[in-house]
Structure formats: structure tokens, C-alpha cells
Image (cartoon, rainbow, N blue to C red; front, side, top):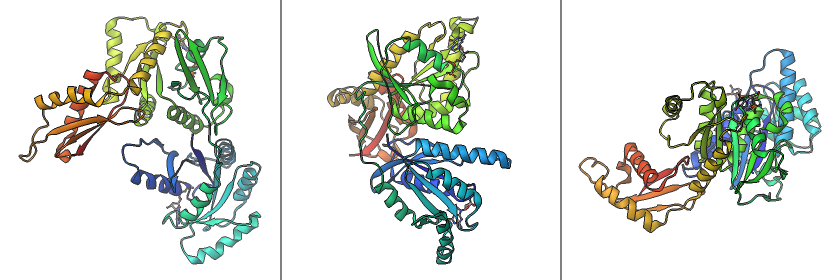
Length: 436
Ligand code: GDP
Ligand code: GDP
């Protein structure tokens, strides 16, 4: 788990400008092979080769004065709890205001490193004005122009240098990690409890996250895996009061940390845009995916047609990658929940699967001979060789003479052939065509 840098401050000081700058830098550099998680307020960046996560804590609309105070307090609490380092941003335009002092006071109670960053210092003139912030009682601060990016380097040098050096040792190294994701009330907690029963569980915190982040070892019926729960499902009462943002962020972190994501849907409600978001996150992060249609006990018409309709509706919505197991379960009556575990483990194994280069070429090259990519501008494309990369999720490189002429449709064809021949159900596959 990477270090987390939270940006805290009043509205309009420039938090999201800095946030976007930090993320864009990375998105411009990182190619499609690394996978990116990105949310409006949560993303990855790096500086001098050190990766970190950035949270923009101030993303939510703030209404009246009262709400404002409450929101600021929550923001600060969030930053203090989740972050490794805190960038406290103020704005030279408006100068030091009372709310800045209040926030700074709250932040200082934590023992996390806090960086006072004075933004909108676009010219030398503002450098002088910035000295006003010494009134906060600091020895030093950073001045920044988020808009142009000047000053970012000095700030990040320091932030990264101060990161704790102790490496996190995963107590469950090598075991499958599974997370159950889904909208509120779809039955995630019920499912978790049904699986874990009164088994004796080993529970640990994930480093750098709150005490609510727990991993539970499941070892029953011949399966051993770790249920990752950063959404705090087993301690629900507390989570209820949290910001929506908080739970979204935790869900993202659970997904990042897992190998397989079980997306739970309520059979009485169907597949909605929030489910789509979770699906998108899991897919972008190249995690294995299983969809569970829960509360199937409440559905009266349980015919095969009904199930097929449900499946088709989901598949219509999720786009190209439809080779995903969909199971109809009831967490309450425990119907088919062990089947769900079994399928999740199959997806886990498929995601790890490596196809030998000789086998891959033996199977794929004749397919390409029979159905070559359509010629482009009179030029023929010849695929000569392929390999699977040694990555955590399946990625394949196809070497050919004219990779730039291989169209999307042919990539899709290739993916479908790979799935048909080697079976990667529930597993996102990446395909690259490269020059040889
Ligand atoms: P947030 O509410 O703290 O996230 O603030 P925003 O990032 O949305 O910025 C608020 C406004 O300040 C926007 O109009 C930005 O364009 C502007 N802004 C942000 N950073 C700078 C800066 O370094 N210099 C100047 N002049 N304007 C900035
Ligand atoms: P979560 O917010 O996703 O963790 O959802 P919960 O596990 O708290 O479940 C929300 C409500 O749905 C509770 O009242 C559960 O008893 C109920 N529920 C969960 N699973 C099922 C199910 O399979 N069938 C029925 N009928 N109710 C369920």
C-alpha cells in the first residue's frame, strides 16, 4: 500500500488544481501497461520514482455556514486518519483567514507531517505577501503556483523525503485477496458474515489505513483466501456517519488491494450506474470479477428465462468485456454462497495463469493465418510471434510488421480467441500489437 498525501484547505484555495496537476503528470508518463485508478478526488502520482496516492479532500459542495464547519472538520479528520502526509493549502490572494487558523489548529493535533503550502504565488510580488502566513507559527512553508506548477518540485522533494521508510510486510503474502463490493444494502455484510460464520478468524489492519480496514482469513471447504474489507462492513454503525467520499475511497483501496472483486447486486433493484462505476474500477485495475445477484430468495419468478434476462441486461451495459461469471445467490439463506466462493477462486486461478510461449504460438498463429487482419492501404499485416508478459494479470504482446494498422475490431477478435482457447472467465485481458 502506498503512502497517501492528502490536500486539505478551504474551498477555492486551489486544491483540485494541484490534485489534477499531480495526476496528469503521471497519466502523461505512465503507459497503458501500468493500470490507473482514478476518481475525481483520488488518484496515483509519483515523484523521483516514489509512488504515492493523492486525495483531494475538499471535493464536496458546501452549503450553509454550519455545514461548512462540519464539512471542514470531517475533511480534516479524514486527512488525519487516512493520510501519511498532509498538504495544508492556503491562498495568498485572500491572505490568512480565521478558517485557515482553525484548520491548522486541528491538523496540528495529529502527529502526521504537515506542509503549509501557500498557493497562487504566481510572481515575486506574492512571495512577499506570503510572509503573512508566518503568523501561523511555522518555521517554514512552501510557496506554489498550482496553475503553472512552479514550486511543486520543491514541495514534493520534501514530502517524498519524509515518507516513512518501513516497508509494510503483508502477513498474508501469496494468498488470494478477495473483496466484496457493491452499493449500500445489497447484502455485503450479510454475505461476509455468512462466509465467516463463527470461524476463528485472523484479523489484521492494512498498513496505512484505519482500524476499520480488516483482512480476514477464510479457510474452509478446501479454500483459503483473505477477505479484504476496508469498507468497514463489519463495523457498520461507524461507517454510516462517514462521508460518501470516505466509503468510495475505501472501496477503491479494497479493490486495489485485491485480486478478485465480487460485485454484489440486489436482485430487486438491478444493475445501476453505481454498479457500473465499481465494475469500471475493477476492470481498469485488471482485477478478476464475479457478479453476484443477491436476494434471489425475494424473486418469485425464478425461471431460467428470468435469469437469462437479468444476465443479458447486465451484459448489455458492461460493454465489451462480458465473459464474466454471474451467479444468483441469497446471502440470507446462504443459497449458493459456497458456489460463489468456488467461482471466485477459479477466477483467481485464471488471472494468475501463464500460457507457455510455445503453446501460445502453436494455438494462435494458425488462427491468425486463417483469419489475418484485413489489409490496410494495400499492405498486409503479418503476425509473427506472441508472448504473455510476466504481469499479475494476463497481458499479451503480438509482434507483427505493421502494428499501427491493426484495428480495434481485430484486437477484440484476438481477445475473444484467447478467451475461447485458454479460458480467462472473469479476467480482464490486455493485448498489445508491437513492431517486430
Ligand atoms: P479548490 O476549491 O481548493 O479545489 O480550488 P480550485 O483548484 O478549484 O481553484 C480555485 C480557483 O483558483 C480556480 O479558478 C483556479 O483556476 C484558481 N487557481 C488555482 N491555483 C492557482 C494559482 O496557482 N494561481 C492562480 N492565479 N490561480 C489559481
Ligand atoms: P450491505 O449494506 O451491502 O452490507 O447490506 P446488508 O448485508 O446490511 O443487507 C441489507 C439488508 O438486506 C439487510 O436487512 C439484510 O438482512 C438484507 N439481505 C441481505 N442479503 C439478503 C438476501 O439474500 N435475501 C434477503 N431477502 N435479504 C437480504
